[in-house]
Length: 171
Image 1 (cartoon, helix red, strand yellow):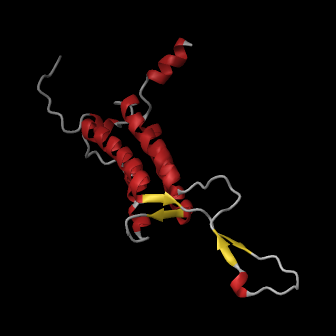
Image 2 (cartoon, rainbow, N blue to C red):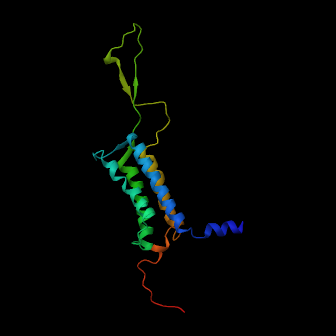
Image 3 (cartoon, rainbow, N blue to C red):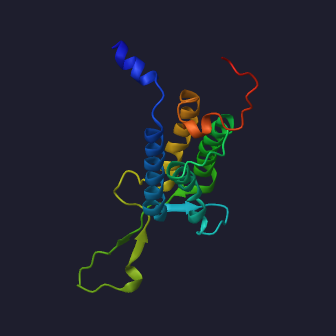
């Protein structure tokens, strides 16, 4: 048990950090691509707003694939927290769920259907829809919590000492 706890307390390898970033970014790409059609954008923002949402996974992909050593540890921590807050705010205020539309055919006795009798209903028998709104509401707090839990564990070695000045040399 002590060995398991010590393994969990250790910092993951740079390879594992980069793989987790890439996988999380790819999950966000799939969510935005496939579940945005059941999402409604508020405040008259055009539907092209979907392409702006791809900024979130692109940051993870760039950090996972190229790992540019341009962030200080403190800046990267606040960037993760800021992305989580932004995802949560977008979910709460800018996008909403849309109930799927189902065409309802009227019952006929004579065998004829008039086009004026066909109407649409916005209620379907499904209890919920998994839209981008729901996923962003789920992943936003996760990023914010991970900021607190994984203080220095998600920084690769290239970024760990970036921007720090060596003042003392110990022998």
